[in-house]
Image (cartoon, rainbow, N blue to C red):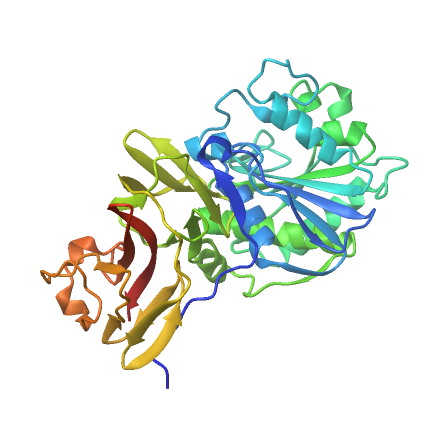
Length: 433
């Protein structure tokens, strides 16, 4: 039985550069039609349940029938800063926004998506305070709270694809309430009666949609819950709304809090310069030193739209939504042609790899020597400049050079001497299991 494995990666990547990395993503799933559901998360950056749920739908759900558009990170700068809005509350800028407002381009662009002729139903995800109740019970359960609610601006919308806003909200509420984690989490409908003069809601995204004839809803999960519990309730709501518009789907996990937590914390691939250097965003140490980077603008791609790489002093901060992942401290090199034919022996079996692959090893590995390439195993305690053809076990490696907190994953980098200097030509990761 093989005791190594090259980890598979997602086919869909979000390619970005540091200067443009905080623009929102629009992911289209299914067969496009004029009955498209638009799902939005992250309009307020301190509400992780919403943007985590939207991100999971964007990356993990397979739409087998119907049309779904997902914007998981609408206010990406605020998500990164863990702020309701770094430039004010974006959800209060849909009635009017000045051209000089830093959010202007984002708001205008998402308005165009909302009013697209294909969009028939819009769901905006929020995390709200406490638990909404029709009557005052205590400071956490009363009519002024927003948590665990299906929000509508009005009961109906004549001429819309889905006119009965109240009826749809009732269906979603009832579906969620069949799967509560605790009876205190019971969902209610909150009708803001926005047109009657709710000063704040008149400025909101959902009311902008309603005014343009689009059936729009918000789902609020309580901020009294942890991130995976909020995400669980959002996913329950999302699935009910998808069923409402006839979307059929599959997902690779059971819809329970334990599996939702695993989905949030799954390994996410971060690729720098088209796999010249790759990290898997899971359990990384807080700082990674001597990352070989060129001096030109950093370009990256990820399998998850919540990953951002942000310039930060002498390095680059990697974020997963509002979670800090690690800081990359560069050592600058010119790049040569990146390798796609790396030969190695893993636990006695010869395999081929390409730059960016991760190899799982039980006992030891050996990079096979190429005459034009120098191999550097980061953390090897040997004294050779080129560590090809050396059989390397975990005991040979200095654990302080591991990239993960469990000290199991190590970098192997490759250099070609060209034009009088070393040029970086790729890397792989080796994980000891």
